[in-house]
Each structure stands twice: as C-alpha cells, then as structure tokens.
Amino acid sequence: MSDTGDTKPDVKPNVEKMQICVAYGDKNIKFAVKPSGKLSKLMGAAADALNLDMKALKFTYDGNRIRGDDTPEELGMEDGDQIDCFAEQIGGRA
Picture: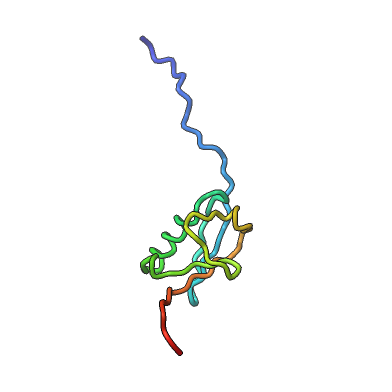
C-alpha cells in the first residue's frame, strides 16, 4: 500500500459575509455574519461583548423585535445595517 497523495485539501466554500453593527447606548460593536445565518449567534456574541446576560437584552431592527432564529436575509438586512440593543424592561409605571 502506498500513499499516492490523492487526498483533497479541506476547502471551505467561499461564503460572503456582511457586516452588522449592534448599538447599545453609546457602544457600537461590529460583527461579520452570513446572510443566511441565525442571529442568535450574533445576539449571544453581543451580550458577551457587553458583559450582559442575553436574556436581559432586547434586540430590534427597524423597530421590530428580532428573534434568535431570524436571519439577516429574512429581515432584508444589508451590509452595514444596525441592530439596536436595549435592556429588557418588564412592567413598571410612570
């Protein structure tokens, strides 16, 4: 048995990524994401970068709340778009 070197290198397909900015107060964090990738990964990474619990945050795009299983493609996002991030508020009165 001889090794003929017919093994192919591990090549990943060229997947185009887009840049999305997450804004929380005066902080802006930029992420490179796949248009077809679920936003839960970005949301978790943003919470980690802000040193906050993801369950305590609300993420919105164009005024609509984002769910973790949404994708940038489904939401019609484009390269350079911004997701707004807020501390989740439950209840309360004025």
